[in-house]
Amino acid sequence: MAEPVAPREPDQPSQAGYRVLMIAPTSFFADYGCHVRILEEARILQQMGSEVTIVTYRTGNDVPDIPILRTAAIPWRRDWEVGSSWHKIAYDILLFARSLAAMVQVKPDIIHAHLHEGALVGQVLAKLWGVPLVFDFQGSLVNEMQDHRFIRRGTIGYHLFRSLEGFINRHTSSIVTSSDNAADILVNEYGCSPRQIIHVPDCVNTDFFMSVQDEAQLSALRRLWGVPAGRKVVMYLGLLADYQGIPVLLEAAQQIANQRDDVHFVIAGYPNVELYRERAAQLGLRNRVTFTGRVPYQDAPKLLAIGDVAVLPKLSKTEGAGKLLNYMSMALPTVAFDTPVSHEYLDEHGVYAEFGSAASLAQGISGLLDDPERCAQLGSRLRQRAKDHFAWQRAGLLITNTYAVLLRRPAIS
Image (cartoon, rainbow, N blue to C red; front, side, top):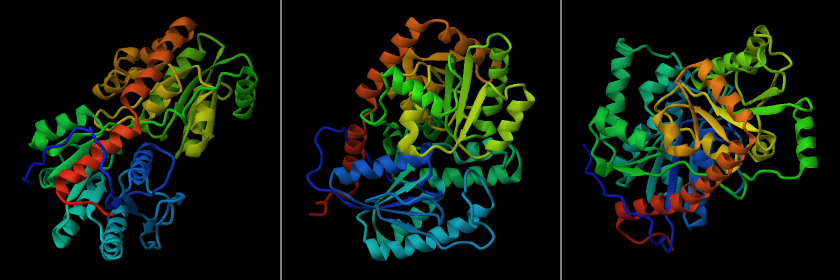
């Protein structure tokens, strides 16, 4: 096991920053949770004086003021990579090659690797260059592969990837986790030392994600997004996939639509938009659900502003749930499945449905919609909780102080 490194609480910021090479084995930037965490971490580190360069896959959107180095393309795969795929093996080989060149180009003080593939690349480079590695753990690799139906529990592939995941986890001296649940998995399932782990929760920019109070503006926004007049809006914003619970959400929507005609669902995100639009039509929801498709990150607050209630039907129990913070910051009362991660974010101010149950999800949504006073109270408390506990400034201090402990030397001037 790598030598544990004790984390340091965020008391005083460093007076200077570091040269940081971030390795992101994904099509950065795209408009969903994992990418938002990478983006906001890079931004806060820049604000605190560090120089951040991101190495990532060929596809993705550039971000102003953040240097991004991309891999070469592979001829048989030119679209976005979301989730587990055999194609990612080729992408990750190219990512290693690009990261190797970036070490010479950037001369980083520290490597900050996201996801297990990034951590594996980072471990090799860290040994070659003798620089520290921070692993940004955002969920179990094996559990994600199961969620995407890429492998099945008990198979040879499952055991191979679980062994690889364990090796990566145990041979990284400093692991950043976004939830206590993730830390428990690392310690209890993979034998990591608690001293390896620094809890840096997903955060939110509460000055950016703010609710709209003007009724005329809200009405205009609802028309813009195709919401019929006079309906209450149930909002989902995130990836569209079975493991995110979209089929369960549609089943809950059907149950609600069969009982009342004053509710409209807005399901925002990608991919698989046409697949779920057709499934909604088969359930009789053609005029009760709006699928917006992909929503740019900068437009997310305006979209969320039209919601009366937000929902998180996610079926993964190990991944973070950063979208909850956007809901919270927008003062949206939220119904989520009863998981440890949901409780970490929402605490006592969430409405919890029985895990995987469409009927329980529908009951929670309808209960909130019928109680405007409770909605207002929960929304207000959730926004205050976001401001008090999930600010990016604190996350930046935790990460920067972790760098300082690992390096034990002055930063760049």
